Image (cartoon, rainbow, N blue to C red; front, side, top):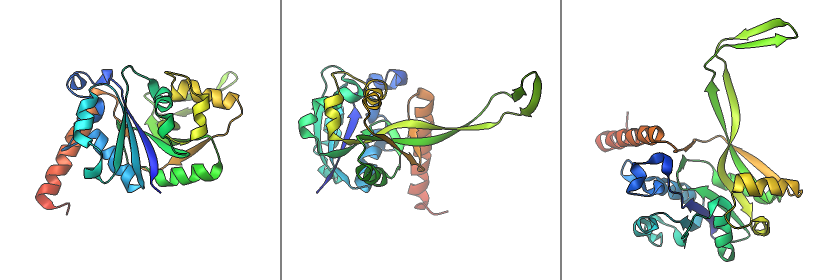
Length: 240
């Protein structure tokens, strides 16, 4: 039985203008492939070959490139949003197509996350949703002063902090549908409601690479990096 994934690809990508004036964000090129092709490749690598793509803005470019998915070793169907439905509302629109458990992925992320491990952990836990988290480290711009009452007890020069962030990749039980209203957001609307109602919301920390390409600067960095990698492989076959 094929495992199922839903890919959210309906966003306008305002922060990536002017690039997204001509193409939807998932179809921006990294090397010789659009971002969405890397998402699909990782899903296939993890055994998720039954894929629903929820598309909206310039969806015809996505459909033209990926078709029914056969060329990429997967099966693709589409849900086209005439108006934006947000990250949870998109699931409501495809509720009749969903299997008992599925993975929700974003079309504009670059990751090699072990989605099979996330899915298996989720099913075993019996949670209604399992959120994939990634650990992000950042260096403070300032020296940090530790105080106790009226005294300075320590000083740390630009320390490194680590945080767990929401990747927006989820493993989900289909019964979540009854908790979703139209045009709702998964993170700000649905998941808080699930916790208030006593539903089990689990988490899974992925140690693999994950990056949301959300700004022009980030996109241009990855675009140039992927182009350089492809040139290297073409010239040297990936050998040092």
